[in-house]
Every structure is written in structure tokens, then in C-alpha cells.
Image (cartoon, rainbow, N blue to C red; front, side):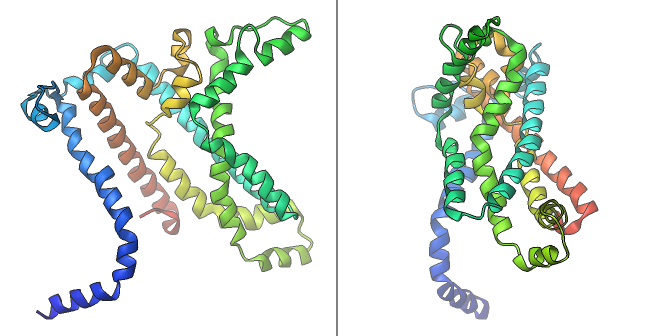
Length: 312
């Protein structure tokens, strides 16, 4: 009875805080925990029987690991896995460097109004849909009236059929991703830099340290724990590709599949062709399991090197 009484006393004491947390907790349960039941679709051949999703799910046949063979039993398995991993690795490495550099540059701007203006301009692309960004890119790369080909013609250079030439697209997709995400990523690092003790920089200036030495010996070491955490979180999604980026920007051009086809776009095209929901669930489960293993492994390595910088 004493424990029950103590529980209700604590509940009443923390009720305002718990009510603030409640909407987020409900959303987390609805969109993170309940959908976990759908992972069973990975092992079923889902067929809708006209009586609702649950009835159809229960009446569908178990097929074991057959849905996973769709990902690993084709000639495209190596290509889509390679593309997904290499693109995300490039996005993580280049995105981290670019975001840190941009955050440091913004923090060094003395005029705060100007800094806010630059920050807003960089942050704006984050809110744009990749459908819109795809049209922007198309206005640059259009074969007939695209800006880049117009510039090439002006200098009497040979124009390029961008949407049928695969070799340029790793660079195009990487630059597009950086342009769209660098503003949002830099805000996290800028917030951390803003909270640093300014007396450290003042002491360094008195000792004659240049801006570069201040960045190298104060800013970067203080940012190290945040960089590790953000990288670990990004590693967990290294098997997830941004569908909008890889589908809308290349405009689903078949000639570009060798360099633009990733797990998410491959599954989407397969779903349109076969209508197999189990296949999609299998791909999602595969990505989640691999992501979990990568996060745990990366965190273990970081923990062995620097315990204070690990996630858990």
C-alpha cells in the first residue's frame, strides 16, 4: 500500500510534466510501436480478401523468407546495396564537414541580423519537396533549354544529355542533397557553438591565437561529442535512401538506374509491378535490422575509445 500511495503521490506531483509529454508519447506509440506488428508481413504473402486489413492479414499464407529473396535473388541486389551504402556514406561525411564549416562561419559573423538572413536562406531548401527541387534541377539540366546546356552552347562546347548520361549523376545527387540538407544540419552545430563559454575564446585571443587556432583547439574539440552522436544516428539510417532524391531528381530515367537505383526505389518499382506488400515489409525489416546492428556496433567502438561520447 505504501508503494501504491507513493506512486500516486509522485503522479500528482509530476502531472503537469506528464501531460506535456503525453501527446508525444501517444504519437510515438501509434507511429513507432504499433506498426511493428506489420513486420510479420515480411513472412506472409498478403492477399486482400475484402473483409479488412486484419482479416486479410490473418488469412494470408506464411511464405517464410521468400519475400527477402526479391532483394537478394536478383542481379540488381549488388547494385542497389552498393548505391545505397556509398551515397549515404558520402552524404554523412560531406554533410557533416559542410554543416560544421557553415555553422562556424555563421557564428563568426558579427552582424547578427545578417547572420540570421544567411541562416534563413540556407534553411529554406529544407522545407522544399523533392518534387519541386526536381523541377529546379530539370530547369538546369534540360537537354534543349536547360541553363547548363545554354552556357555550354554559348562557349561553343558540346551539350550533354544529362538524363541519359549516368557518369555525372553521383555528383549531381550529392550536390543536390548537400544543398537541401546543409542548412538544417548546420543549425544543430550552430546552437552548440552559441552555447560555448566565450571566456575560452577571449583567453585564446589574449594569448595571441588566430581564428584558425581557436577553431582547431576550442570549437572542434567542444563539438566532438555532438559530431559523434549525430554521426551515430546517421549511421543507423545508412541503409535507408531518400526516395524523393533518387526518384524525383533523375525523373525515373531508366538509363540512370545503374547509378540512381537504391533499395527504396527498387522496392517501389517492384511494388508497382507485383503489388506484393510482403516484399515492401521485408525490405523495411531488413533495413531496420541492419541499421540497428550498425548503430550498436558503432556505439560499441566509440564507447571503447571514449566512453563519454557514446550514445549508451
